[in-house]
Length: 178
Image 1 (cartoon, rainbow, N blue to C red):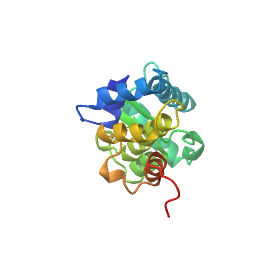
Image 2: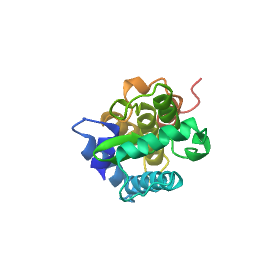
Image 3: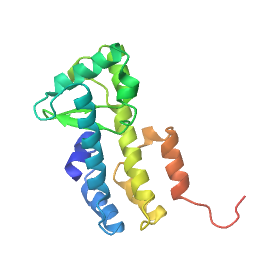
Image 4: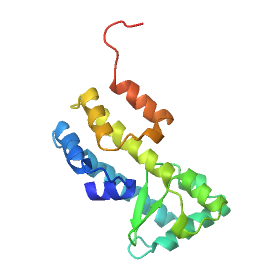
């Protein structure tokens, strides 16, 4: 499970696997990461089926070009409404189903090998963060420290509104500090 997340997020942090394992342990090994990956795969397959693609034998290039065609046909909003954090691996290549990434790729007519996936990665990092912080068994401060140490909250995301919200929720002020 951690290999999938590490690959789609392109996180080379050596502590990523052990940190994710610690996050899972903090939830009582409730499978937060497994459910997240299942949601990613389910959403990716749903989009592929709507595009008329076979989930068993579609190539990465076919999916990418089908997404580009959906942008040109103006079908993209309804198609990708719930896929902000969906990154899918086909043929050892990560493909973003994040609407902003897909529109940007189409607008700039980026070739398959030069596609952007940064918005999808940022959204997936945010989804991981919120799922662990919102879990009933986790301690917000400890969870935030682990998340920061394993590369899920990189400096370049500091402007990202959701990341700021997660940080505020994780580090709550003591008492009535003004």
